[in-house]
Length: 290
Image 1 (cartoon, rainbow, N blue to C red):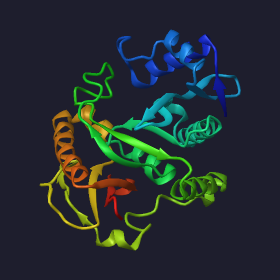
Image 2 (tube, one colour):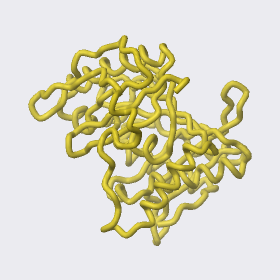
Image 3 (tube, helix red, strand yellow):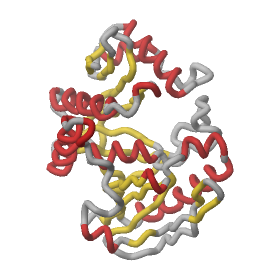
Image 4 (cartoon, rainbow, N blue to C red):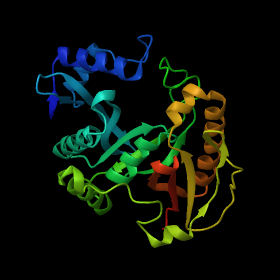
């Protein structure tokens, strides 16, 4: 598998076809038009493809130039990998290549949106890439044509990836060492709370409760004081959307209230601890001064 920069209209059509395949969009409204994509590539946008030996496109990342508070950057609009190619580090590889393109363009900020209830995505973004989040958008994309969203509001984190900071460079170096290790020597995801001893003292503001084969959100405490707090989410939200949509909607409403309350009080999301064996993950929120 190789990561290549793509340029042509045919490349853009292939990316659009991959977008339909990954998200299962039923109409054309949600898919990036190839004609728009190819023009944007001539004015600073970046389209990267993860290509197999037969040149088949198995993943892609698309970003456009952006400006935030006068600071130039890239807005990464889409990143996707086909199901059969997941678990091989392609998402990380595409983001690393995107970082290199941003540095070559002279910018040090890459942003994108992500669903705060997708634990695998949170693990990539926070644990491997070192992003931070302090903005929460309610129903950012409105009703979606993807069955993966199942009628639940498309609430999103607005992710900041400050690609030259020491924190990011440490996370990328660790991810690189793990990727280079033989498969039998790669370490499993660290258990919740091992990265920083101060995490042990952080209060979990939404202890979960069992609901059959699922986890349900507990009553959330929105007024906890402290330098750090933890917010728990299920690790199987996509399956929950399909099989228990009412519970998925409950999770959306509950975590929306939590993130909005704590972000408004000066906290931001700075890390994520995934415990797949327990069916959950936890965000670490810290006050900006910390």
